[in-house]
Length: 120
Image (cartoon, rainbow, N blue to C red):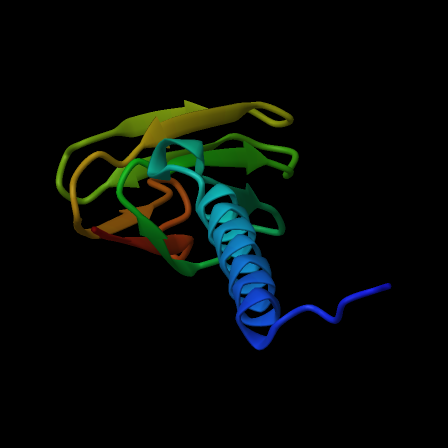
């Protein structure tokens, strides 16, 4: 003779299933966040403009500027943190380790500006 599961047995199974689902979703969310060290941002210097011009990123993000124009550009920090010339087709990267607002520009083309806001 077959016995029907008791309400307690069904409740335990439902609770176990819900708990496993919550654990699995939490793990997926944590993997999706990654660490700030894994963050990257690509900025193009093209048509005498930085794109994106303004961006907010987490601490630890590495920003890579790539020159897509036919002449060299610089990525120059107004705080003196960096001043790098980038030749056509080349790239240069900088990792932002501290929160703050970082304005940069191209020395020979002073209308080429950008700003990276770094948050905790």
